[in-house]
Image 1 (cartoon, helix red, strand yellow):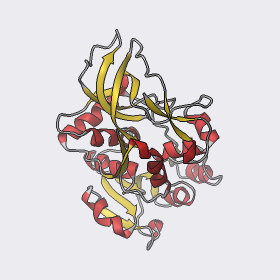
Image 2: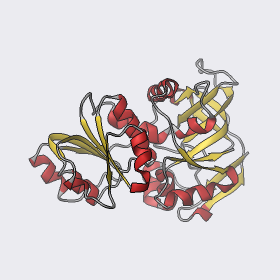
Image 3: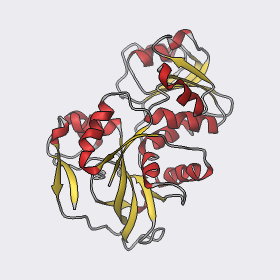
Image 4: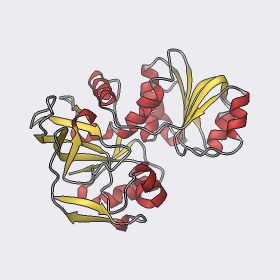
Amino acid sequence: MKAYVLNKTGGVENLVLSEIEPPDPKADEVLVEIKAISINPVDVKTRAAREVLDMIVGTEPPVILGWDIAGKVTAVGDKITQFVPGDSVFGMVNFPGEGRAYAEYVAAPGDQLAKIPADTSFEDAAATTLAAMIALQVLQSRVKQDDRVLIHAGSGGVGHFAIQIAKHLGAYVVSTSSAKNRDFVMALGADKHIDYQQHKFEEVVSGMDFVLDTMGADVLKNSLKVVKDGGKIVSLPSPEFPQEVKPYAQKRNIDVSFVLVESNGSDMNTLKDMLEAGVLKPHISKIFPFEELAEAHLQLETGRTVGKVIVKL
């Protein structure tokens, strides 16, 4: 089968399309013929930086990156009872770890997958994986009915799912984006939009119960100014916060935390249910053929992607 092998970290030229043996599923695994995969900022960071590769994948190169898959089951291990060959499935697999999604076939743990709803395409299913899982795992235990929530970069991969999930949980949602993405963000369900290029969000809102920070650095520091005493902030870019953040947060009893998403079949089935109910609608900005996977990485590197980038096999 064909797969992209990363022999060393660095530029996209290090993603080498290679011919390798297809995997044999273990007893608790499902062999999936891949129809679509999703590319995330973490894919780009892991490909580019050895320290991120070490943290996320945890093994020496060569490795096969990627975690978001959608496809058809072709074989199942002896312990698998919930899937049969022919089922359409999707999931975020083996994260953190080596997901090996950049390939024509993936052997994935059965307990990390869900069946794709009948009216959902492989592309939409692949889009509703890691980014949606982050939003779900961050919000479901921290946001409740009538909370005031600020979501930064609401037009991005995580952000556009987070707005929809926060609204489903009954929150009042404020989101930042550029002016050109205002209508998109509002259509997702946001109650208020802030053009970050024209306004300082910390001068526009206050008294927030929760902030989802997808940017870090100054955005994290300024987010502390808009959270009420006893509120919560989750910052996704890095577990390392600016030095002044913790003392300020402790003084006002603000819970500031970093969350690393983890593969979880129960959460995948929650996302499946949300897709079926129309609660979640992924937005795909670009679809690349498998042969142009490097171009998908370059698109993510622009930092201007609205919604998700998909690679189709």
